[in-house]
Image 1 (cartoon, rainbow, N blue to C red):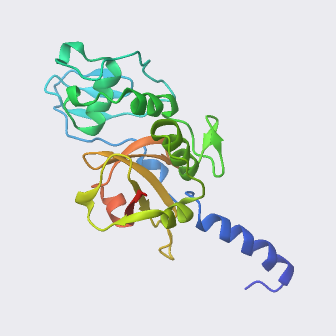
Image 2: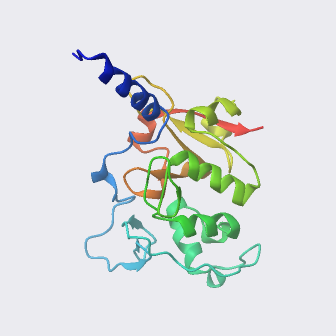
Length: 224
């Protein structure tokens, strides 16, 4: 019980700030996870933190801001031999054929920011929070200017009531607090994957089907 009213005045603004932030996120011990089981006797080849078996199975290993250089690519890839290393990386993260990963502007931006640490209120490559990452990506890749934190962004979108409606560029929202108030936002990519600034691992791609995100999923919306 707080007896001094002076202390109460200090605590209330801090609580209000935290409710709209992305600070309450996935525990740090979950920053490295295995997306599929790998054979014990299989030799692995690493591409920027992605372990690839010869059967195409992958596991995700966090590296510290060690990104794959992206060079210019055509609008389509006719064969796997023409694909670049970054395309293999994101094909594995999204669980898509490498020939389908051709959006150089989008993945170039994600690669440039990959692993940038989380910082509440941050908006630079030294540290960024979830809403500022969303606002920055939407402006740079889709030429859509957004402003505000996760709660304010939720109020700006047209709500999508079914997960099957999700398309590239839609926003996905999570309520990771006891009051079930929107506190985190990311951008939907494809195949149930979304990119976001996580407090545990910085800028990364996660799977909406993971139990953690299923538990806290609060809805999605499309920019009008």
